[in-house]
Image (cartoon, rainbow, N blue to C red; front, side, top):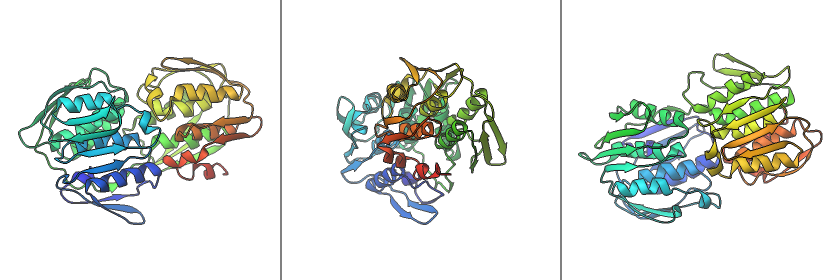
Length: 386
């Protein structure tokens, strides 16, 4: 959003990860001037997209899905590509919606390379959103269409609703006026808005905080997670409610969250529709829980960097954990976890979940492709030495 403002933004405490660097590279490619300081990013926004570019999003699906919509505002063709995992992640639903809004889209069956060319003419589109990022991209771009353009979005399917609420909170801060239905199945947004500079700190990430928490409860240790906001609207905050339901101690002291476990872990049934990114970490914890743990309503976990349902079932199975796949989740029977060799499949969340499992296994676990953790959490594996 800062890259599409008419001024200079100062973004404090950004995470230096591979995904962040992919996003910075794409925004620079679109024309933003981004200067990296030791503890902040200084971003001078662009007036318009003026030249044809080929942009590489690396492994970042968030960057791809948000930038596709933003790039559709321009009058120059922008082509997106990415790594092998990105080449297997479809944007077909989003591209169909963009085409309905007058954007010229070129792609083979919805996969990168994808080219988009504006202008954004508005009108009505219908977009099923197995990932919330499709809708977030449309909501971010719609206000920046030219004055007089009206965009209407029908949303017959929406997963990960809390992340759309986050996007709307940013639009609210910008003073954007929009109409929406209570269930988020319809939005109407007028063009002609201008974004003001986006200043302030990047909130700490509850999705990443799940992994040191998982390591603590598996190893019966205690971890203090600093900088989290108990009032934050991030969906993955619910991960810690699930930990409590499984028998863990979760206590807030200001902006510090303390997580530990003294007694046994309990299984249960947990709906992950709003927080599918929590599935790998919860699968790791469930391997040590009493009875069965059912992770359900998360079919969209299959369309992330990997099919996380299938991968977690297979890799935990190698360690002797009884896992049953369902179309929308997993049933895991906890017990003794053996050591052995597992494959992170180049997926940062799979790698971190399996590393946490290693703290409670009977013998050592070797994780192939462990460097993938740097995509979102550089240094996580080093932190486990504590």
